[in-house]
Length: 248
Length: 221
Image (cartoon, rainbow over all chains, first blue to last red; front, side, top):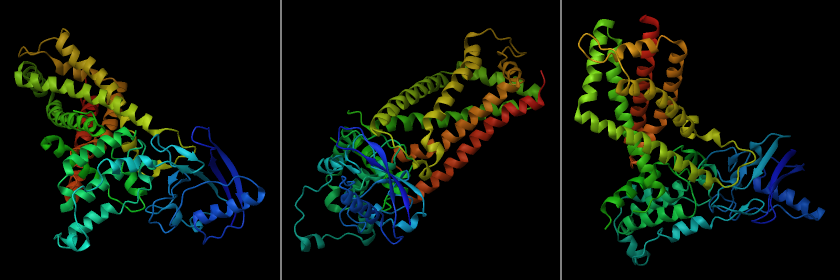
């Protein structure tokens, strides 16, 4: 199949970017979206042009490195899918496809489709961990946790930090990402102990990074590759309000 | 206390929920207008008089003014922060496909409601408080006549109906959103609050919409 691509090209962080058109022929519908971009890049190399830069790592939908706006949707037209797990069969022959980086003030574009997501790391560093020594695996296995609780904690921990929630949010809010980490830790006995301090620190950091307010449109839940529930945002709000009341 | 995004949202939620509560009382009071004209005039004017003298009502009215102002001012602050947070705009944007229109346009709906409120306050609240109103047979200010005569004008009825539709969509998202901001995360109750929100928004919107239409078509002045 043949596609008409319009891809965001930007030299570096400070420079002004623009959409550039490419025609790509000979695309197989079995290719993943990233393989289609690889195909285009190989041809660009042969022509001596600079390749289109984009982040990727596992290409199995579990690392969270890849992520771009495809036809105006985070990770493309499918819900609950990473960009690498999107295949060309989701597009029609002769279609025009717009490809842009995830955009948010907190996610500056580094080059082309590559963005700097360190803001997420800073949120985790501010409190998304357990500071108590929990020992080795045998010791943690001796802590009794109900099966349902571990499953619920794991549902939240499944977040891969790809940034689609921020990219699709009209306010560029990081509420889903931050709340997933908060829920993950507050459900477990090791994490519960520091929950009040953790939530205050993480929310403060989230604001400091320049993310917007959550207005509960729930677009994030739809685009999240791991289908993290927006109910976690309710949980974050609950834990935050509780911390405001009980924290010394 | 540090002013975080979540604290801003708490102000929006609590002021919004108070306004939701007020709407119920306001609608119940207004439904008296649907009684037969003679009864309605006496009852409505008596009720309006009751509200203007009571100390408890006075406190509630000050909370009401404060809620409206806080809700509007904080909405402005939040919108400013959100616009800044967005950074550069998408060239091709289809994000609207994954969320409801009203949830994304609370600010637009809120602005319509605010403009409506200015008109509404000017035409009734201001006139009742500071204007010279004729008295009815019981000696109460005759607000009923003002209301009924204003809804003889077609454009005024349409203005009200459109504002109520905006209000309905605003409530539909606002009610559920406030519950989430306050921290409702239980799957079962979160689902229940959506249903309650639907019933509440429908009842308030249709209730308010009924009154101007009823007056326009049934009462002549």
